[in-house]
Image 1 (cartoon, rainbow, N blue to C red):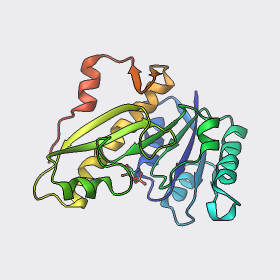
Image 2: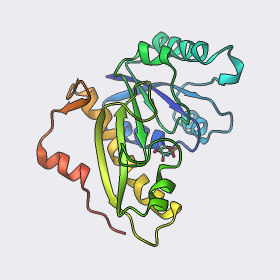
Image 3: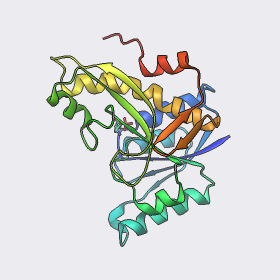
Image 4: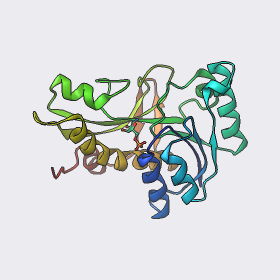
Length: 216
Ligand code: GRF
């Protein structure tokens, strides 16, 4: 069973979708530890309600960014975590964690990368006036949302969308593709070749994930 470590800064709805996917048996995994940088993160409540250990680790309590991420890596290693999942962790991860988990850290981003990286991907998309947006799960490298892409899902973007309405449409897909990406990883169906992730899954399965039927 795949041992997961999760990092989250806020609401934690993606964290919840992972917990729920484990509960239904869709995902054969176990969350060993939640690390959060925010004492008010609702993700902490979700961990407590599900009997998942959590640690509050604030970067400001450490001498440097490197020191912080070395300690984070240590905590995950101590619990034999195999894959680190960034579920709304609002910071750029430091090198010591990336070196400890090369191509073993996944992030979810609320835009179709490489468009609109960084903060407020949905607002960037609305302001730009695109007609398609969506979300991306990717492996984490040292850049901001630049790592190899595992899976993406598209949604329509309408002229009268607000940041909120587009975010809501995208979030529904986040909750599908993040567990799916973790499942692929847990089943050994992902292989990284340079910038590309080779996904061992049938085309019709991928197509439904990438281009799902949208209701609104
Ligand atoms: C999501 O939109 C995710 O794509 C982004 O941060 C948000 C986190 O939401 N990285 P939640 O905390 O999982 O509800």
